[in-house]
Length: 548
Image (cartoon, rainbow, N blue to C red; front, top):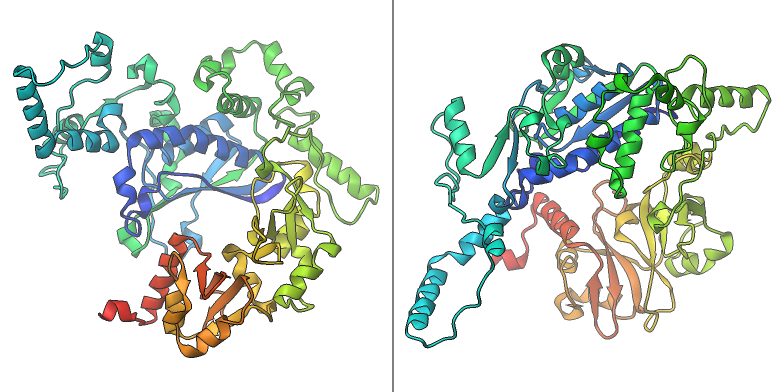
């Protein structure tokens, strides 16, 4: 491993954020959580691999679903074979209200024809208006006023079974009258859910979705894993969102089974073998010769992995001990003061998002510096672009990330998917503007302190009028603000809320585009626009439109 601390904040269904984002409930379904489960496990395995022995890894989601939480952590502990242990951080986090993690849960799935989307479509086709039209059409068919319907095959009828609405699927939602086991089972079955007691109960066609790792641990595993040490943060406990957090300590290198599982999941994600089939046999049943091979150079040459972690006494090439030994040798031989990450076998990169971050040459900057009036203190060295990316986007990278990771050769060992914030983006159309780059809203707070040109302060009324979609005409602004905008040449510029010019934390800045004529556009995503308007309301501002 390379890192003392690793955070695996994995993609999740987000049901824990339903208080601030109620719309997520319209799209939620259990099949989504089952689909995310292998991806979450794969990311957690990768995080465990790059964690140093003695280091810590945090696994977290903003979901309350055990399929995405405890089941992932349990499988991680299971295949790490003692290399990872759960720790309880509650004593270090005074004021935190967190409930214990679960050791048992139900494994459910929905029929594809009973998901929220499927039921919405069914209701649309069977509402009162559609039923009346269908009845009218059938009447015309009987009277011979329309051509007969096309014949449908029996197969088509089998693929579309009749949907029976559940009496519990109501709007508004009505909670259960009782929470006893039988009543809840009857309710879930009525809503189209299928419950499995064990993995053996899962139909063969569903085993790629409902995996063995989704099920609760055995009684013996429950004692060993101690899942109660993980944290379940419920929204009502601290007036917050819902989160799941597990703190894991790496006490020894990962064994061959963990590496084998990780490699198999990587192959599956690329359309290869099925993980569950590939690892159907218990690792103890694998012949000793094959098990030994997995801890030597042969496994290290797998197409998907450049190195493996081994629990053997002697450090094999590609193992953690081997890499640690190499770094120690480098120190003894008096190599460069910057400790470079050990080089591994390069992964073939075809996507631009997997390209390395590279420095930007000094002769690139003069036009941008002049156009936006950037001061000499502007940190040009912290802006980087992607290799082969033709500098379409310039990313602002924090000093700690650049100096401690990128400058030390971390990209030679692992693939950096993303880092930093967009600072500048290249313009595709230069008809109206001589400057080929525009300011990006994502990283504007780190550019504001150095801008002396094309940055303007606006009153709260004018600022509020800037935060909207579509073409914004100048005649809606105050006279003083119009005088500032009218002589401005086409291109990007920044509007700052008066009184918040130096407050980069509040980020009351919006990137605008000066169009031809007397109009402009707001170059801010709709989601962030809503957040900015919410901040204005929090400041006590009520727009004239709202007053009317």
